[in-house]
Length: 510
Figure 1: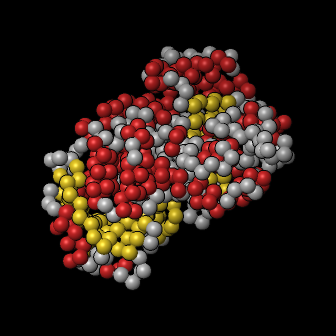
Figure 2: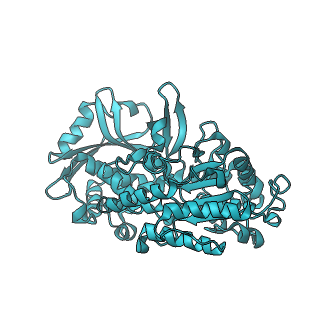
Figure 3: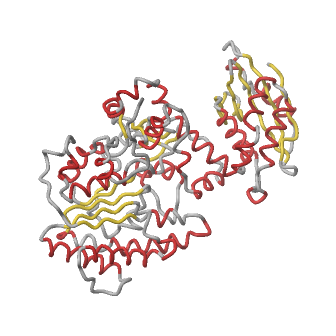
């Protein structure tokens, strides 16, 4: 029986080591970072080990050598204690206190722990921040280590349209808070700021132009996450029990260096082992910013199997001009899969099966009430339609899904609005669906492949299913499959914007 202890969601390095829990050694990257760069910024998706890495650095700079026995850094670093300012913006109470007051209280708490008196008014966070750094350095005659975690939480939590004003206020407060770091550089030994998103340096870190962004640095591709080699080195017994290729398809695939190794999300793979090899979507349960799915819904963005983005845009996250593709990359829904050096672009796609399902489910729930989605036989109904080819089954099932869409979410619909919903439902079922497929004579709306059968869909809005059906034949949408040996079905569908439902379905074998 496997009695290994997995640190699920745990971020405290000392307790993980003291309690003998599984720890994948990242101290090689910690040492390299400490020795090569002084002021750093790191962005990675949630649940990727950023907080644990900061805790590891804290233990290094507190001189706790005994915790590192058997790890890479143990005999390669002169362990000694440094004064440390460590803040995590996820737990300082900014939602109830307000960000400025929350930071003021945190600075005061750190100063009290080191028996230092802050000289300025409590909410003069810039001068108190600078004063704390200088006094700590003077008192201990050493540079100060500054570790700031989840710096972007006070921004991300308020990016919905009705709260964006708070995000802008918090951005300005953070800019003031960080503005003193450059002038305080002589008193700083090491600085690392982490978060999920890479906000524009102009808006947050404009006064901190000495900050090195290591998020896409090839040397630090594996600073967080678990590589295939690390998995095989640290989980030998577990991998004897389960299908390695299936594990890889479900949970591997993240990459921040085009030539680097792909990575597993630590939370997902550890949960998989803890649950004795149960293949499920664990990342989904950890939550996604609601504003992100609202943006995708409003823009009908549901096809992200492969998209091109300029390299410079990957770090574009400006409150004044939010762009969805960089956000999806930074939050972990998309990852780098290819590079087009001719056009200076990266090709992004879903990293694995788990993340793709997370995205599809989150987005579908932005359209449809989540409880209704889980309790109703929507997916079973679509599966039954594919087997029986009964147009009434398709009509009834899709309309059942539509009936769970709150009135407030209906927009000024067009065909694309309905396409998105149908695409998401088929995708969650696990069948292959390709939307807006180019052919020689036009563009077919959707192609579904299921059990050696092909379904060619054409959708119309406020017209007729028969018109949609005949367009499939007239445009030759099914021609490419004639010699495939697969059975081909043409499906015409008409939606009614007045009734907000599928009004008519016409299906026939080609």
